[in-house]
Image (cartoon, rainbow, N blue to C red; front, side, top):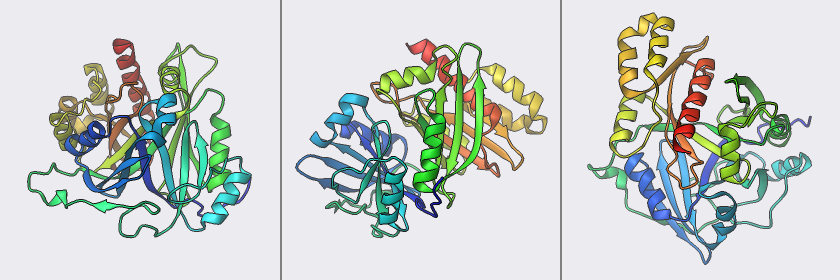
Length: 347
């Protein structure tokens, strides 16, 4: 394995391609509290830049997106990395098997997984808060509007990536060799008829975390196979946003139009047996439909949204960490089962 030091230190931005920019921007701004800060228009694309906490999202439409949209539908097309040495990162990524795209705006772009690429930008580039390589027109500070939604999201906790069965080890090794990530944890969830395998890889800085998931090919087909079919192959399954207080965030988001997965009462009955000291709070979690787990460092609270997109692929997660550094083994199963229940009732 090649030794790569601090090749990727941060996610500079995440770019979502869509056929309906107005609707997607409205969802992020109105329902999730993002602020639109700038716009960029070229001959073949139109982008809106959205901020919340340290998260920077680009929502892009236009002819430049059509090939991706035909293959995958609305979804994440680019996870841009801030790198200490862009040229060296390009070299190591290509040596690890990445393809270098033709010259692109914003910096060199290398292939990642499925149709998703990584634009590489220098650390500190776009210090004015604007991604480099594009002509941006700033918009008035909507966050200063007293009627603006409350901002709950602090940062991007992790990106969950769905891969083809049998390719998990290949991609885990790729992100180690290409970008200097290390393996953080792994988990196998068996629900009888089908199963999910996962590996978490993390940058040396600790500020980029990818949860790689793939179906077990020895089992029957399940939700990950369905995602891969709808998405036209591997892609970003969900973005997990860290919040300070998840219950008011979920209540606020739900009021503003975010549709979350439901959790059966039996789950909370089980929590009472596991976490007797949280009895009063478990009633609040039950009411908000929030999941809870713990590891050796502390507790973890989280919940998934339903996908707001036509192909029912990309969705979002809210997560609150009370000291927890992991993902909660019981919650991984509970979240998997929640998505599976929703899949079976909607397909």
